[in-house]
Length: 507
Image (cartoon, rainbow, N blue to C red; front, side):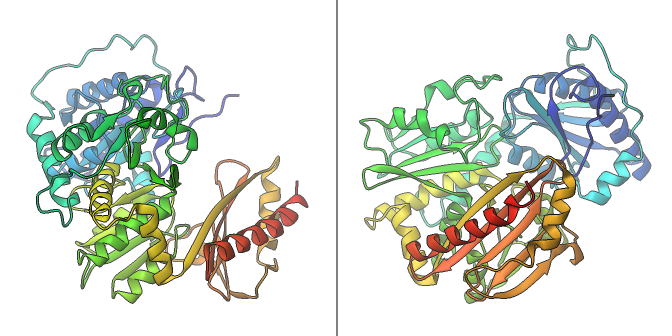
């Protein structure tokens, strides 16, 4: 018997195809029907839904099916005929006071995948209680045949995203991300950018052509095509070194300072910095640290500002926050929780990030990860630092010298049986590392429960256990402090050795 796809707190995601184990029109109709009943049950007021999509296989078809179904049921739809970055979908919900948002995307998954994410009227992804309520209205999955030739039905309930919507977003991003560059122009920096065939294809080049001087911003031509098969970026994930291969080729003989990529839905950013005649890749924690520290140094985050970050992300930013009287909120993994904290606490001046290469500088523009804000801010930061004869890697070293060296690594293990993961959870807290344990925290007992355990050692280094939840996999997130990079890295190797010996007993 085929397994059904489950609609969870990250929406639904799967390989495109026929049958209940694949993502298809059957699930689109199930969700669309649920949305109609869910919204109508809330009130009789006029309803508005924003629909966006990426460049993936069936993204356009699914978005049209949603639009036709919803408008037929007298729900107003704001529909983008072009591909939409995830942060732009969130922005449109805020700008137009929409009741819900639908985003057809599978982020940085391979080409055969697609997905459906839903957003609430606060413009962040649905929370578990909202998903629970919505699923009450789901009807049984039923496969729908021969729907591929559907066309967008023009009617009084269908409204198209305007050029003004796009222009407003672009101008606001520039105004926010130019930071302390009053002119909003960059003339001393050379970069290469790639959207990896994805939704950054319009917004980022439009912004860069406005702020960069001529012949200083280059684009990877192979990636500047809306290609659903990701022909030249088969694994379009900014965390992978291989995604920079085409950027490095484009950079050849151009004296490039910086390489920037956004993933297919433009919520994550990848960065490589020219340093010692090579390109040094930054991880998600390092990129967030650079942006955050620069904002603090230049007085963008002052009294009543806040940092919001996930349990498994770098604790160094929290340390810096406390030393600078910035409020700190730690939340479970998933940007929906970050958006929820921003909404519930009515936070204005905020920096939010996750170690998985996503951050948010200005929450009035979006309540999800915004790689467009990030690539623009990083460009202005790199430009200002270059005036001081410093690159982003050297700036990172300066931060470590001031606040302490921290290194991170995530190690993953797969198992044949889910039961073995339960045994590992039970015995994880008994492990002995290079230093005594200072604290053990089980997040299952937090206000927002999460299946994670964090061990903190006396030197404040941490090892966090987090299972997949859907597969027999475990990730351990390691953060170590040291008086030097070398010392912190040596501690990571020590911890990995202990973990490998521990996990091997359950293989």
